[in-house]
Amino acid sequence: MPTVAETPNEFKLNNCPTDGISAVKFSPTSSQLLLVSSWDCSVRLYDVSGNNLRNKYTHSSAVLDCCFFDPVHPYSGGLDQMLKTCDLNTSQETVVGNHDAAIRCVEYCPEVNVVITGSWDQTVKLWDPRTPCNAGSFSQPGKVYTMAVTGDRLIVGTAGRRVLVWDLRNMGYVQQRRESSLKYQTRCIRAFPNKQGYVLSSIEGRVAVEYLDPSPEIQKKKYAFKCHRIKEDGIEKIYPVNAIAFHSLHNTFATGGSDGFVNIWDGFHKKRLCQFHRYPTSIASLAFSHDGSVLAIASSYMYEELDVEHPEDAIYIRNVTDQETKPKTSGSAS
Image 1 (cartoon, one colour):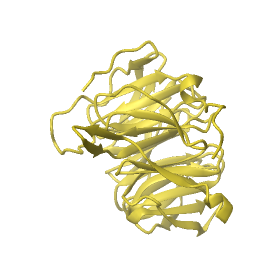
Image 2 (cartoon, rainbow, N blue to C red; image 1 turned 135 degrees about the horizontal axis):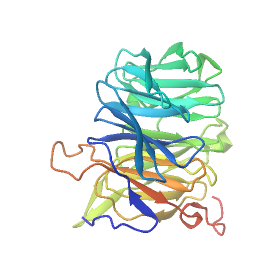
Image 3 (tube, rainbow, N blue to C red; image 1 turned 45 degrees about the horizontal axis):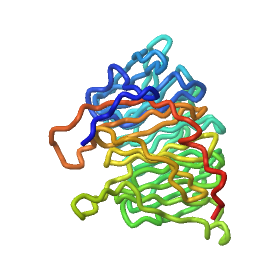
C-alpha cells in the first residue's frame, strides 16, 4: 500500500491519540481549533495552525463523539454513558448527565441552542447548555448510530436502517419516518448546508443523496451511487463508507472509506470532483473547517479485519482548494 507523501498542502498532527479516532470536529468559528475524540478515553483540542495539542480531558472509557457548544466548551460522550463538558479556559470538567447505554452521537444545534445526544439505549436526549441540564428524552426505534443537525431539524439514523426527522422546536412527534434507501446498515448521515436534504452512507460501499421535502417531484431527485470499491485481481472489494463531511460554502461533500481513500463529490450534479491519495488505513472521520479551507482527515483502523497489526492512528490536516471542492460550472444539473 502506498505511504502518505508529505505534500505542501497537507501535514500530520503531532500528539495524535494512541487508539482509534472516533470523531474530528472543527470549531464553529475558527479553522485553527480542532476537537478530537478517541477510544483512548481522551478528548483533545488541537491548534492546527501551530500543530500542537492545546488541551485534553478524559472519560473513564472510550469516547465515541464530541462537539463544540462554543469555542471554549466542548461536549463529549462514549462508552461510560456520561455526557461531559469542559471549560477549556479553566480545565473544569462537568458531568452533565447520562444515558442507560453508550452515547454514540453528540451534536449541537445553534438555532435552538441545544446539545443533542444519541445513544445505544434507543433514545435521543436534549440538553440545555446554559445550566447545563437535561431538557427531554425521546424514544427512537433502535440503537442510534448517527445524527445530523440541519437548521432546527434533527436527522437520526438508527439500527434497522431507519431514518427519523425531528423538529427540535417541537419534539412531541416525529416529523418524518423513513427507511434508508440503501440495503445495508447505516454508517453516517450528514446534512446539506442549504438544508434541502442529507447524504447517507452504508457499510456496503454506497452513498444515498436524499431530500427532506416529501413532495413527489422533489423525491424524484433522490439517488444512490457506489463508491469506495477497489478491483484487485479481478475481484471487487467493497468497503464501508465511514465518514461524510460537507463544504459549507459549495454544498459539496467528502466521503471517507475503509479503503483509505477520500473522495470529494458534487451531489447536485452527480459528479466526483477529485480523489486524494490513499491514506495508511481506514478513514474513520472527516471534518471541514467552517470556511471550507481546511479538511481534517482521521486515518484510523476500525478493526474491520479484527485485531491485526495496523498503521498508527493519525490525523492529517489538508488545505483544500476551490479546484478540489467547488462544483464544475460546465456540468448541467440532472
